[in-house]
Length: 405
Image 1 (tube, rainbow, N blue to C red):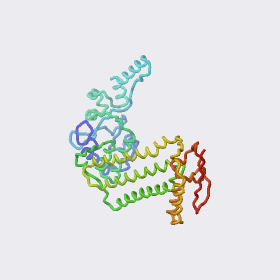
Image 2 (image 1 turned 90 degrees about the vertical axis):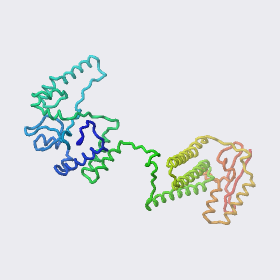
Image 3 (image 1 turned 120 degrees about the vertical axis):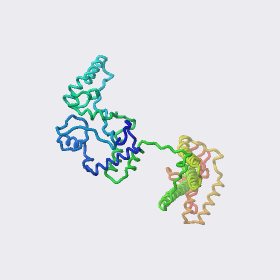
Image 4 (image 1 turned 90 degrees about the horizontal axis):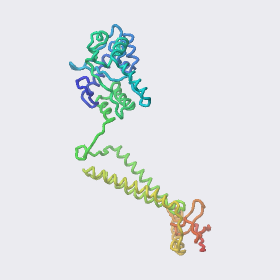
């Protein structure tokens, strides 16, 4: 407002705001100090009350000393001033929940408070305060009491309450302004931060800005990205190894298979995203759509495999049939292969992992279930009773007993 007579306040991104902010810091550094600028309203009030303030800006309170007078703040150009009257203060209203006769009585009270006689005799002559009735400022008697020229040259402003106009918003603005006034930040940076609090930027893929793509060039940034990728792949490999070891655990039979499929999908999707990151394409809209599609598919597949399927089968009790029962010869053949593999790798870690993979066991009963019908050994059937009797053969526990009832 220092450089314009326009009654509308310019925004924080305007030229006027930039010049006004720079001039404010100039005043602080030349005729004031940090302590004065950081002082509360009490400091200004004390300066007016004691008469020690040379230039003091404060609310109209009708308490001027004989050596003080009111005037408007000059602007940077002739005919422009920064004196603005903010229409604010006490508000009067009538409740809609009272009786009609009480509403009429309250209306008469408001009419009395805002009448010319009360405003002239009480507000102006008794308390030396300004009133909203502008025709009084052409009265010589009132102008001998108040500074009529100050009011005539001032511009009346009303406080607009926006939806996001809150204490948090005002606190952020004050913090940014203090960073410039009492810190080392540039005025342009501070005003941009204030503007960005509420401003929404729109970009179109048809503009030059939409074609700009950001890449990491520094060695440190690439190392961080590489470490994150290695961490993800190591995590996936570790989960796969643990899933391989517990492949035939009765209690988590379905969960293990769902997790493995999920890991496959996640790893494959991660590889696709990495490849797309290094593909040279100028159509960023296509890259964005494909990336979003991959991420959405991963999220949906993870939800279906890990949660939805478990909800479907949580109360399902499967029945064993003759087709589900494995042939004893096949079971013996599988165990023979396992024993042969164990002999070739008697003490190796791989041999132990493979042995865990092919061993069907239950955590609750702490027993080994030796059957190749792995997909249904965890369910109880009325027609088949699978029992486990532990025996040792060549260091491998391979006992089973099937009773047909």
